[in-house]
Length: 513
Image (tube, rainbow, N blue to C red; front, side, top):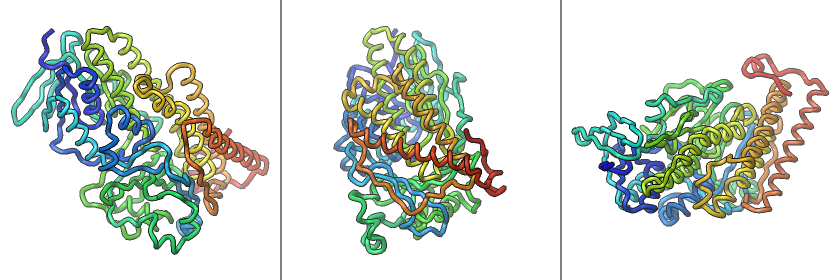
């Protein structure tokens, strides 16, 4: 049939623009229209990339030059723990890498990245309506999809063979078709802002005050994604190009409540200042006015992510949790898969099996990723022993399962969603098992008053993760820490330690295996 466009993409941020760009490179004659509702992108949560999404951006999208000149290089993850507000900074527990990261990662200003991606898509030949508000869409399978939008105060209607939903959390098609499913097992909320005046992690002043702290690390702490952890919550601190720092809290509403205050910015700042590491860094910081945001009930996914004539990519298909920064990973896999599917379909290939795979595997990927990494994790993330064990095992599993594959053959790896097949199920079950055990250990520690007892006086700086056999060292270290926690748990059971005060017990379940 003769449609006005081959593909219409609703949403011009990273996922939509990446889908358009890869599609145009695969099939330059494709007629693509991008409809973007905003006149300019704003900053959003999601400033940190992983090794997988960085591979997609550098190896598939070709953004190495841009990222190197306009964004910051990321130096891994760094975790900080404390057990009382007045704890000295150099007594807090630090867990992270000692050396530079082995694989590329970036701290990105998403507004700038999204704008650059959309510019590339337009340069590749995509048409753009912006700002434009979609008022109606009709899905008619092979008979074509019809989209109506208001552009320049006038209404326009177009037809296309394929419609791609890249509307992010708006999840336009999932809501329209009744496929939207909130993840009620994971009731997390987020508040974040950008701050100016944050103290530099690697300054001369800190070297003078804390020489041991400064000398034990061979890379820049400031360029890492630094995390503060407490029971039921974590805070990210991410530097951005130009000097601002993104800081936000994510918390499980079953366990933690954000302190009250006159404004969201003040509530967030007050919470950060209540932590000894946060107080050192943010004592003189100020939230940038008008750049404070909040979201409740972050996780969700779409029960179906495609059909004949339509597909969802990125956050329009689902979102789990910002911890470990998986959002752009999902954007990478989904945009790469759908752009390949569209190119094949428009070339005349029957893509029914590929649609079936995407619809069947995406919910499996989502559930497996959630259960193996995030389910009830907020119960133990405030305990340095338990969370450091999880970090080593989680990141090692990530490198074994995903990072090795995408760097070995990115063109092929991004066309297979994670946790596929027997190997994927085995990995998901293994990770889910140790995660459940760490949750159980945390609940017993909380019930007996042992939770966070070792959040002082030690640090663990390791060489870093690499996608080869040297991962055995990190896996073994993580296993030993986990097993040591199991032995402590056995001791707590045998000794029958006194239960925690009633004020603590009333705020959390106390069951354990």
